[in-house]
Length: 385
Ligand SMILES: [Zn+2]
Image (cartoon, rainbow, N blue to C red; front, side, top):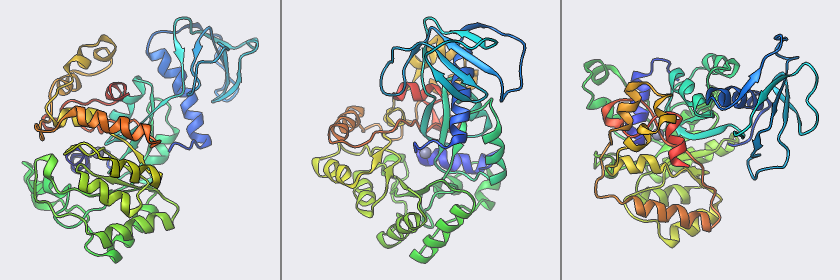
């Protein structure tokens, strides 16, 4: 699950490494909408003589425009450089005109739970995902800066490394790895005390973390029962230290007990909806009154209980944008908790939504390896939605 991916991401990481939009995000998002839409092949336009990017004016016309809340009457968007200059109105002379007839123009999508690399960010953009939220991985400030400047890949936010105790998730993947080097030499950083948790959180923030990720995982639903779980004192210390620094704390949970503990510790969000049982009223009410959001990752739960995503892989809009290894990966499933019921997760999402809990879309995709089947960057977010 999350864990598997998190860990895979960490040790195989070749590139080791909110919805509030900064100016920079907006820049990239707008650009990506244009690029991404073109990539979908639904817009055709004439290109005039290229100007400097910051002066270049692009007009998308005849598009159905969804502004994030509803479809609006205007059908034209004018972009200067990397900023939206106008919605509606005349097309400025000299503009590069893109005819969006038959297509919908919308804000870039954000995948709220991934484990990514440059290849993942590139693939995500092909599906209109302009930002991916990493949920465990070491991305250096230098890499972050480079990614923010690039226009051919999605943008990234990251917590740095997730917080876990010795012997806690996801360390089991290193200690059971087929790769001897990883088994012997890779040491996932862990914390044993509240004091260590504070230091760990401070370190992630010093290295550029946008939020803090905390693992609460006993292994039941991911095929490794009996894992060491973070105690309440350490969990609370981590959450408080994140908040003291103005950062959100996001918890990985897969069991109801983990969900209960996370919410009572005051986390800002859950990186999964648990799936060992259907969420009860008590959990739904507690989550709603805490103000926490939930990233259900239904596609991951679906894979965990044994469903593959071969129907998604067979969709031409998907197969035309993914490499064979990702298509093969979609056609597999993790099947680590076959007794789980996807219907319980659906019911849980509906109950949370009705109670006013913000539901964020995220898929928890990582790498195209057999144990992480059923997911692909970009494509799986559409399935999640
Ligand atoms: Zn994850």
